[in-house]
Each structure stands twice: as C-alpha cells, then as structure tokens.
Length: 381
Ligand SMILES: CC(C)(COP(=O)(O)OP(=O)(O)OC[C@H]1O[C@@H](n2cnc3c(N)ncnc32)[C@H](O)[C@@H]1OP(=O)(O)O)[C@@H](O)C(=O)NCCC(=O)NCCS
Image (cartoon, rainbow, N blue to C red; front, side, top):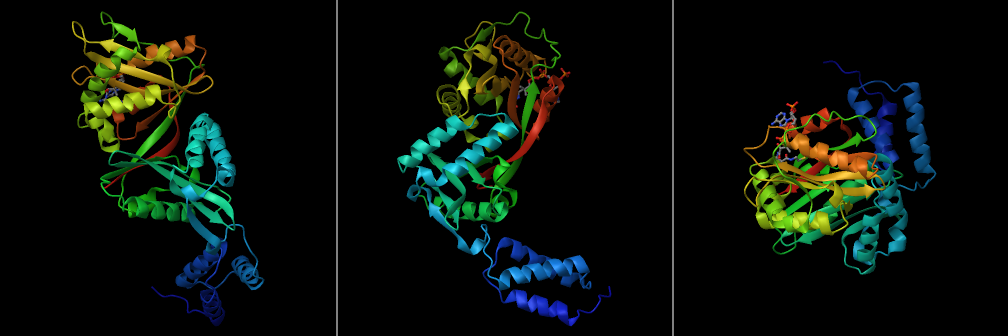
C-alpha cells in the first residue's frame, strides 16, 4: 500500500516530542496520536495541527497538570494516614451508592480502622501530593484477596490502576506461602482487565444485577409443595456449608472462589457473610433453607443481606445437584422476594458469573437487569 511521504513538519514534531520525557498523560496521548497519525502517513489536518501545537505550547510553558504522571509516587498503605486518603474513600463510596445502590460506608469504616492500626496491606498512588488511587489486600491463610482498587476519575485511571496493581502484586508475590490470589474488582477505578491479564491472572466476567421489588414479579412457584422450608437459624451453618460445597462441585464459581471447593471453606464463606458486615448486614427474615425429607441435610438455600436501607443482596442461592431444574431455585428466590416485600425492601441485587447461564436466565426471568459487569481474576491461571 502506498503511503504519503512524511513532510518535514511531521518529522520535526515527532522529534520535538520525543525529546520531552517528563510529560503529562494528555501530552503523552498527544504524542501517541501524533505517532499514529504520522504512522498512517496522512498530512496534518488543521484541527489536529492546532491541537498538537497546543500540546507543544503546554510543554514549552512547563504547564503543570494535576494528573501529570512523572510526579506520581506509590506509597505503602501503612505509611498513609486516613486523612490523606479520606477524600478518595468518600468518592468511592459515592460510586457504590449511585451505581450499585450499595451503602459502602460500613466497609469504609472497617478499612479506616485497619488503616489507623497500620494493619492494611496495599498501596496508594500520590500525584503532586494528592492521593489519586489506592488498592489493598487481605490474607486468608495462603490466599491473598485483593479487596479493592479505586482511582479517582480526575486522574489517568488506566495508568495509575496498572501501576498500583503492579506494585502491590510485586510485593504480594514475595510473601512466603502465598499460593493464590483472588480479585473481584468493581471498575469504578478504571479498567483492570488488561493489567490483570498481563500480570498472569485468569479472568472471569461477572454481572451485578438489580431487581425493582415494586414491579410485579412472576410469582409462579409451587415446586416446594410437600417440602419443608425454614427461616435461617444458626443451627444450619454446618448443613448449609455441606450444601454449598456439593452444589458448587465442578462449578465455575469454585474456580473464582476456592472457599466453595471444601466444606471447611464453605463454612468460612458462610460465617463471613452471616457474621461479618463486609457484604452488608445479614437478614435472617429473608434467608431460607429447604430440607431434604427425612434427613438433616438441605436441598437448597437462599441467603440475603441488607446493603443499604431497603436494598437487599442475595449472597447465596443454591440447589443440590440432582434436584436442580425442577423449579426449586425459582421457588427459593420468590420466597426471599416475598419476605423482603413484607420487610418493606424496595430493591434486590446480586452478582452472577456470566457463563453461569442457567442462573443468569433464572434471574432475568424474575425481572433482574444487569447494572454493571465487572471482572473477577484468579492467579495463578
Ligand atoms: C442456579 C440454581 C440455583 C437454579 O436453581 P434450579 O432449581 O436449578 O432452577 P429452576 O429449576 O428453579 O429454574 C428456574 C429457571 O431458571 C432457568 N434455568 C435454571 N437452570 C438452568 C440451566 N441449567 N440452563 C438453562 N436455564 C436454566 C430456567 O430458565 C428456569 O426457568 P423455567 O422454569 O421457565 O424453565 C441451581 O442450578 C444451582 O444451585 N446451581 C449451582 C449453584 C449456582 O450456580 N448458584 C447461583 C450462583 S449466582
């Protein structure tokens, strides 16, 4: 293919830009576009030339941008005070509230307490002295869990998110006995798929779904006729852990969360969602188990938490293999929805792995819609 020859001004511009090493990301983007443009061998058009000139003038004037990358430094979270990153935390909680209807303040209070105790591992990116983003992880035995990653949209999110992940993972991988890292990250802080993939993670797409409880739900059920359904009681911890372990055998969610792969892990998962506030406040009145006739074992369960006033979150739904596909999952969901309506809730949310087609179809048929897709990552692949 014939290319138009580069004219001198093109080359001059490219050389000029190449000599400038301390550039803001806008300037770098200008350069990248110049290069693409030059690579395409097209003559400069007027608006583009004007824009490129602006970039040059900005550089000549030594103009400083709040988000210029060279001034970015990454600091260990344990060397950071709550006050320094509080604006970032507040901003993040607005995303959780506005986009996911989730009151994240409880989780942030926990993060702050850990920060104050200098007990939270992770790092913060500072740009010109302002906290631009942060990420943290917690250890669960030999597993590292990346609990959050947030970069303010006022800064270059992709670049900072990548740097934060690189720095933190570099540190994590030096930990003795670390055998696995899991991450489930809401993409408020910029895209994380590419950096995670490049850092050796296996990625899974998950969906955050929402049901408006004020809209009528098709309450067709009846599948539980003759079966005993009970409200949650702490005596169900053990049988429910067994149910979860059996329900997720050879299941994609067992690849994402290894707690599902053993009964002890499933019990830890249950204790986390029922006893700890990380995933909202457990609502026993909207959580049910379905009994196996003539046995202490369970056939199914649906568990619900409250993530903000009047907004529920299904933290678990499962039916024992061999009993799936007979309407029990739908019946459990309808029972929980009915209970939530009685408790004056107005919304219900949940997360599901996109390739879990049966579950996605069930939720869509009930009226759930996807609010956001996000990425779960597991290392090593
Ligand atoms: C997902 C799960 C809870 C569904 O419960 P279930 O009792 O098998 O589902 P139901 O029989 O109530 O099905 C209800 C609807 O879901 C859809 N569905 C359920 N399983 C399906 C499958 N394997 N393929 C396609 N659609 C499916 C159907 O559209 C069905 O609608 P229909 O009654 O109009 O045909 C159950 O299969 C399970 O425990 N799976 C393993 C754990 C899991 O994935 N939990 C959900 C995590 S988000």
